[in-house]
Image (cartoon, rainbow, N blue to C red):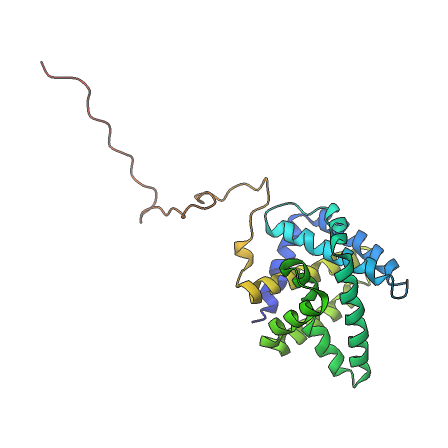
Length: 233
């Protein structure tokens, strides 16, 4: 089920942890993708892998690692399938928009998770689109509302030169990743690993261990002193 407010809040929290790094990732990604879309058809095979690279950076953060620019280049292992997906997406959504507009928005909502599915589930382009449709159709109208709200929001923040478009693009990708994890696997941000170098929460248990809770009333009492080792004469 779509939870727009909490997903937005969680996405911004992730960005605020390392805002400079996310800005650099978003800036490089949007510059390359903007140039790629200027190349008819062939540019899709450049834009697609870069978009997957952003997803790889988000996946790394989910696993407790720091996002890095190098994740963008790792997306090129998905060049063929990501480029084919974008070709299918833009052709079919464009046709849908010509048919009274609404069908185009519905198609865009159906397939909004497809690039994430390509990486996370290893499916081909069309199979990933079908899988995305399956996930989104469980709450289609709220997904459609989410896509519209994020699209309008991106149009507004993009008015801020450089920073707005870069951070806005990353924000949308993080929201979609959080949504995918929620609807496909029932995972929440609380299950996300802590990034390296983060101080542990006081009283938190080590990874893999059950949390410890102090007894009611505060801290546990001191242990009794050990028995005397002397002997009576």
